[in-house]
Image 1 (tube, rainbow, N blue to C red):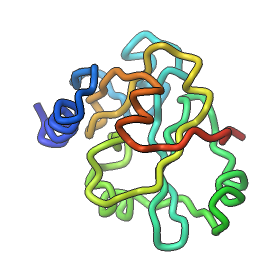
Image 2 (cartoon, one colour):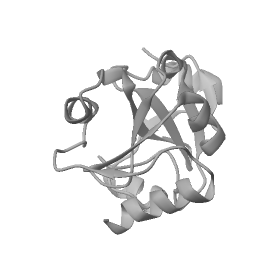
Image 3 (spheres, rainbow, N blue to C red):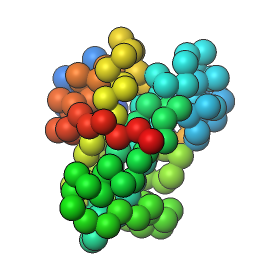
Length: 154
């Protein structure tokens, strides 16, 4: 197992998560690729999107087909929101874009979870590489991340 995926698996194990990391031959870099590889709906992919709120990192875990309304995020946080670049994402999370998991980051992040993810019994999230995922639920994501449910879609 890739060391990034192993880091995620260790976190899941230590926090009594229900799922195990799966490494796939197919790419899971985008929500559409992950959904195709797993034969699930695109909205069952819990995609990790990193934003900058001032100097702080913000992770939005969104349903795969949803776009994030950054104005809603700005209104909620009270600060300007910017999309983070790849180098900053890697520095803050420890993971590359296309494989950023919702857990096991190298720095603390403010975390928000798209309310639309509550519609599904099973979700799939990135597990550290563009070929690794793990199954979870919305409730479990909230428990593992300390994330707040938020109406965030555009």
